[in-house]
Image (cartoon, rainbow, N blue to C red; front, top):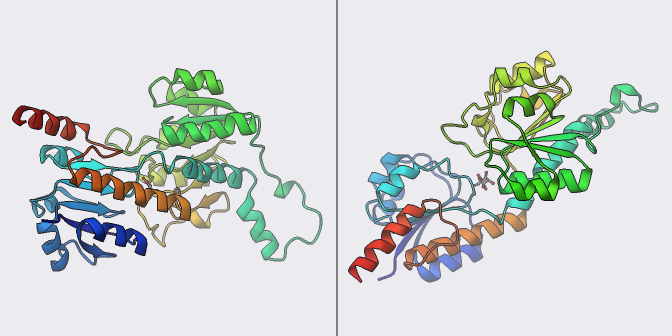
Length: 334
Ligand code: 8YV
């Protein structure tokens, strides 16, 4: 009998066709509530779930007793209760690698846009204010040759650091990551304790995943340690930063500017002052959002779920323990 798959989120017709070849597919583009009866019925029978951006609480797993695997169309998996999935022997697969370079491009776009005040000065022209040669009031800050402080130096952090070091001649510092001797050799990156990095870097760029340990990693104390000329960039998760503390630091001039792709609440509340501040470039979580990369992420998630539901090892697995346990069980019984 064909396995049943629930898909959540917008998918292209060729991706849907591919899934329908292998599975009985129930596809939901958007849900008013997790209590949607059609969704719950589909979930009750589902062997697999392919999901983009729906937060999955533990209670929902109780309603999916046949679930064997979830494939998320994202590298981040803070929307999933990983321990509960592991306890229930459910594989969780994600999409690293295929989005690394695109997300690093977004990070660097924020570095450039904030330092050179790209949006602010594009608006200045639109308002018809360019009536004489520009002066110091429109000057920005150099990026090349400056010090880039990476909070986190995983795949995406390393790709940003590489752009900084090799493309812009920046000195790279890093913290909150295991030592990376290969990047120290390749890029001349230097490890610093986080407080030291915050005081030394001209650009502080956050790329750590959201975990209980990194929630509000950057708050009032950390902004106070930065230089008034520091430009702060967050392309990780909004909750890694205490947003009221960030707003206060920008208002008080404790830091110069911020480039933000992620927020504590997404979509951003209309009440948030952040997109209206002249020294902020705010983007609607576009880190990996290019046609090519979103296609590649969806394809990776499809490959992951197909492999997982065929009993093969998915390409990118978050909870390795489930796979090891299954292998152990099958070698004992086989
Ligand atoms: C996701 C992201 O694609 O991959 C991630 O972790 O943050 C995004 O690029 C987006 O959340 C849609 O699932």
